[in-house]
Image (tube, rainbow, N blue to C red):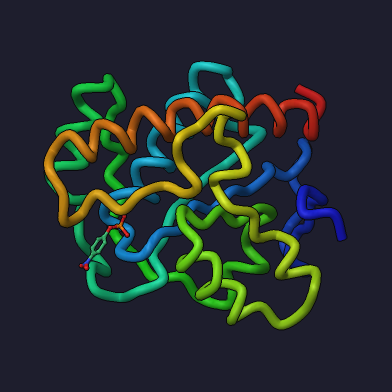
Length: 179
Ligand code: 4NP
């Protein structure tokens, strides 16, 4: 199955419009990179008027920070970039997420390996596409770097990288959903 093919869990009530295309961003702790990707993407969706057509969420491969707000350094970096906090709380990735989302985007190669190790078939594995797929052709990065143990400037770098990647992702999804 093409990773961008829509799927809808069986038994879900049909609404009048098309089901939203569902995107899940994943990192390790779900307090820095993936909630930032979610909030940057959420803002881009609102600016494009596509909130009803595409939905997003984020989670972590680890359970360390379940129920917690994003790291205050990431919230500060997002605020500096003009990206509002949407109230997200940490949660852990689980196998059911393969059915709940159309596209699952790990932020680094370790996250990607951890998610793929849980996939039960090729269709699930095909939904997993690295964030680096939407980096610019001259990007200095091979993955979204983990800013957790570094300086505050690392959080600003991640937000900038995500803003660029998310714009490319949204362009691709617009084509996919015919928006
Ligand atoms: P994230 O960053 O995966 O981008 O949320 C981290 C958050 C917490 C830890 C590591 C990375 N930690 O070791 O607790």
